[in-house]
Length: 219
Image (cartoon, rainbow, N blue to C red; front, top):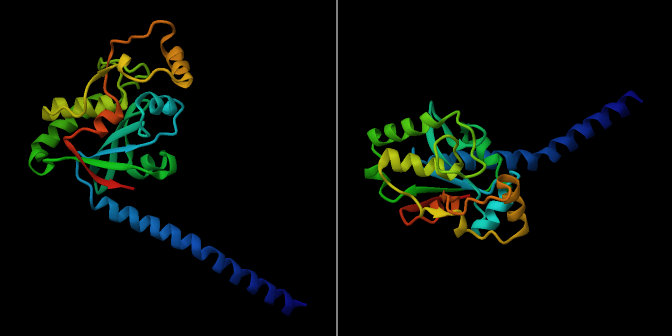
């Protein structure tokens, strides 16, 4: 009886080892891939994904793009971080940031002339602009003042003020597709009956499609 129990235990352990092999291989592959991806990054790169936030669907519908959130990549103490406008504006580890996206999919873009434009001095200026905004509240009404900040506004202002470069085309709220019921419901929630249709807005997709940028990684 005792011998039978030991045999059953050994069999169970053997089965569990083989069952875990695919999981280990998948984890090892993902970890290795992430490490390889990080070697491609440079300070000042831009990262985009499809957010799983409550307002993401409305942004996608209004802008006709899957990309509803974006941030700036910086390396600090050997770790890649994302400067992003959430609640509040903050710095988030890249792995945590990508994990919040739908399907873990993300795209990294870079200034075409980053090699010459993003000098250590320029990056220092850009970081100073971004750091000054850390801790500010997220702007769910997408206003253009610095009192509160949303994600693409943060990127635009960091590049414009730190490097004198404008990424993407500034638009007005009226320029977006506001016809879908999900978009209208979100507008009603945020603005009531007074839509600021002439408010200056920079969308994630406008930056994403900027001719000043090239794609570094589409993961």
